[in-house]
Structures are given as C-alpha cells and as structure tokens.
Amino acid sequence: MDKRINFFKDYLIEKYGEALYRIPIDLNASCPNRDESGKGGCSFCSEHGARAMQTMNSTTTQEQITDAIKFAKKRYGAKNFMLYVQAFTASFQPESILIYNKLLLDNFKAVSFGTRPDCLGKEAYSYLKQLSEKIDVWVELGVQTVHDKTLKLINRGHNYRCSKTAIKKLNNIGVNVAAHVILGLPGESNSDMIKTAKKLSKLPIKAIKIHNLHVLKNTKMGDEFLIKPFPTLNEYEYTDILVEFIRHIRPDIKIIRMTTESLAETVIAPTWKMNKSHFREYIIRKMAFEDAYQGDKHTKRTHNELLPEKSTLDGSLTIWSDDFKEHYHDKAGALLEAKKKFLEQANIDKLPKVKLLDICFGMGYNSLVTIDYALENNINIDITALEIDKRVVKTASELLTYNTHLNWQNCLKSIAKNGNYLKRNVKLSVLWGDARHQISKLPDNFFDVIYLDAFSSQRNSELWTLDFFQKIKKVIKSDGVLLTYSSAIPVRHALVTAGFYVGETPAVQRERGNTIASLDKSKILSPLPESDLEQFKTTRGIVYRDPFNVWPNKEILRQREFAIKEQKIKKFDIL
Image (cartoon, rainbow, N blue to C red; front, side, top):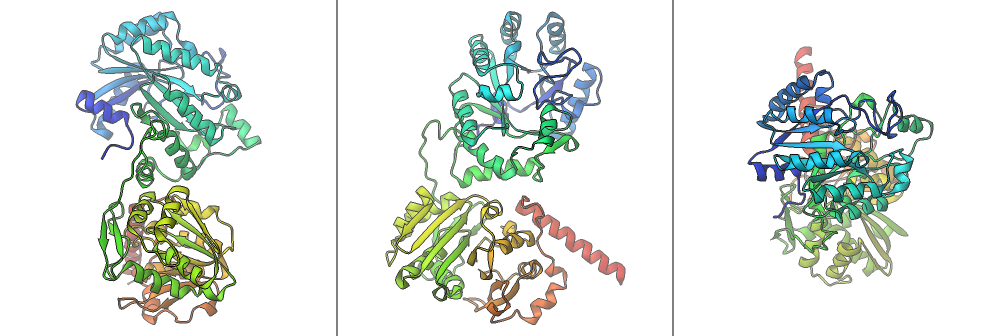
C-alpha cells in the first residue's frame, strides 16, 4: 500500500541511506521584528525564539553542536547530521556567513536555515545559491498563514505576498524551501486553514513543517489570552483539521513535523494529555480509518480500500480489522448477535419515539436490524451512530445486499457517502471519529437506548474504561438502557463504579450472559451473578482507566497491569 503521509524522514533515508538528524544552533541573533531591547516581534513568539530544548543550557556554538550531537546519538542512535540554524531568524551578514562556513566543515551532509521571508536580501540569495552547489541547502521559511488579516493580528511584520515572492526566488536559484505554518491561529476557521494548504500547494515548496498553536507565557499573545481567551485546539480537534490539511497538501511535499514542542511549564493553552508518540500513532491510524492520503483532495485521487470478509455460522458476513486484530463479529453469526444481544433487549416497541446511540456502528448490523424492525412496526426512531473507520462501512455497502423492509445496500451506501440515511419514520446519522471525542458533542440525558459494540477490552480498551462510561452516563436518559455483549469483570465493575445498575441478558451461543446497565434499577430484571460481585473485590475487578480520554489501548492496558501489581504488593504487605 502507498504511504499515506510523505514524511521528510523517509525522504532523507531514501536519499542518504539513513536519516539525517538535525543539529540546531543559535547564534544569539535576534529578529528584525523586535526592537534593540528585544521587545516586540510576533505575538506568539517566546523570549527564546523557539530555541531547541536540548541546547537550552549550552553557551557557545560549539557547545550547542556537541550537546545536540550527543543528545541525538543517545536518544536516536544518530550517525549522520544536518546543521539547523534556528532560534529567531538566521541572518546572512558577512560575519554570520563566516560562522556558517566554519561550522559546515564538520562534515554535515545538509544545512537548513530558519528565517523570515522579509530577511532575504541580495546577499542572502547569492550566498545560498553558491552554497547549494556544494551541499544540500534548505530554507525553512516562516509563512505561518496565507491570510494577511491574521499576519497583521499576530504582528508578523510581513504579508503573504512577501512569502510567495521569497519562495519563488529561492526555488529559482535551486534552494529547497520548507514552509512553516501554524494551525489554530486566533480568528482562523477550518476553511481558512485549508485555504493555506491549497495556496501553498500551488507554490514550489519541497517540504512543510506544521505546528499547532501554543499560547505561551511571557508573550504578547499569552497576555492577551489571559485577558480575553480565544478557542484553542485540543488533540481531537487538531487531528481533525490536520488530516484535512494534509489531504489538501500536494503529495510530493515532504512533511517535516505535525506538532509543536514547548516546555510544559511555559504553555498556557491548550493543555494536551496525548504525548508526541501517541499523537503520531493516532494521526496515522486516523488517516487509515478515513482511507485518506496526503494530497488526495488536491489531486482528486479515488481509492476504496475494502476489508477482508468471512462467513459466520448463521450465513451472514463479517470482516477482519487488521488495526484491532479481530473480526467484527464472533463465529456464531453477525445477524444473530444483532438480533439477540441488542434489538430484542432494547424493547423499542414500548417507546413512543426512540433515541438510540449506536457506539461502534461497524458494518451496521445492529442499527440496520433495528431500522428494519422499526419500519415493519412503524416505530419512530432516531439513531446517532459513532464510528471511527469509514472503510468498514464502504466494505459493508459492497457486501450486505439484504432487502427486507430496508434495502441494506442503499442505506449503507448513503451512510458511506453522506453520513446519514432517512426513510419515513427512521433517521440515522453517523459521527465519524474517536467515540471518546464524538460523544462529548452529544446532548445530556438524551438517549433511550445505547448499543455498545466495541472490539474486545484487550483490543479496544479505550471504550471500556470507567472514564468512558462516565461520558455515557451523561448522555443516557435516567430510565435509558445500555446494552453490550461484554461480560468481562473489569467492564461490569466499571459500569457499577460509574453509577449504573448492572445486570445480565440471556446468553447467546455461550455460557455467560450479555450485559445491561441503567440508571433506573427497575430496568434490571436479572441481576449479576454473586460470583461476579465477589470478583469485583479481586485484582480481576480492577477497571480500565483513561483519565484524559486520549490514551491508546496499549497505555490503558499498561496502566491496569501496573494497578494490578500495586494491589498485589499492598496485599502482600498486609499479610
């Protein structure tokens, strides 16, 4: 399969045989956008001018290089390096050029200059052209946005035309250009940010460095934010716009980075709880779930990745998820599960109008069986479905050709294309993305019935945590019911801990029953077995936790294993 994102690191490996690691240096320069005392400048810029954290305590240039190389070797096993002139603005005065030439004698394979488009005079272009004949030269140009209104608001000191002119001139002399942009600048909408992607893709840039806005302490923007806060992007919101941004970036443009790094104690907003490695994993998975590729909106690329299918014992089809390493249904049967574990326990014919939340829509069996029943019995039903993987719905629309009261294929094709379906007394709409984020958009005390049909707690623990159940508790009605196939002890204990009354529904092709939960005790007709309640008190009953609702599955499992070990140690100490 083609790579979904054209990473700069992959380009370096392809060109040099291995990655080049950046060695950042700060020549103690300032910025033409600041006065002699260092005041002024862009409203978002810190007093250090984005100096690399690993060299923050270094003094001389040589110390910076030594410390940065030592850091890169220890952390990444680095062997080859690229000199990176950063912090504030690289200048091209004669004294600076002498320093660059001296530093480049240390066998760097490439050099990158971080600078502003309004700091490139004739001397700069002349030097960069000559240098590019000896070594690979990159200029990382602070564009930030294509919107002049925003550039003025953040006191950038130049307009977009200035950036465009510099990019074209650098390209004409054979210098590689990497544009720096910031997503989430105050006053910019999603469409504004996408416009930046579109305009930059029409220019001869070779790479792009994407930052999410950090509002920092001791900056003009930080002071303004404390007086009058403006919206900033959390992990999920940033991911949504970043995916769209990447999809509008020309496919050949290399992406150097996708997030900002700042010292935690300097950040006012936003406060992220997802670390860098988790975010990188999350964005790549989101691109896969949406069957998205860098530049597919730019080039109008058509693609339709279908997932592998398999028959179940009742003759219905299921498919395999390589991301979660499980089939969407057990071997007993997809249709059987939908009818016995969900529809028959929902009792929707007893309600005047049904508000149903289908968490993990998947192939659609649970919702479509329910719609079919509603159409047959003239029941008004409004279904909101949460689903992370658009590919599964596309695949299901090709495979499921049932035609009862509902034409399943037509319904699924409508959902895959438009995210919704409407017929007579039935309405269905899908919110795409991580259920932990999407459920926060839903109204409180709204749903009569909730289906929870995530993958197993070992593969998809994100949706079996106490913290996620607390979110479900907010959106379910006081007399609503939650239905799920899971009978796992940590899951049932988490539901009880979240404040639900929890019981069992009849077993389907297995010994243990399925699970029902409600805030209304009268809805629980069959209580949990006494053996389950006893196991709640043991290490088996330790619940899955995700306190910030951003942790990946492996981290949630790791934290639970840690809690189990801690409890065993405490028990041993007591004994």
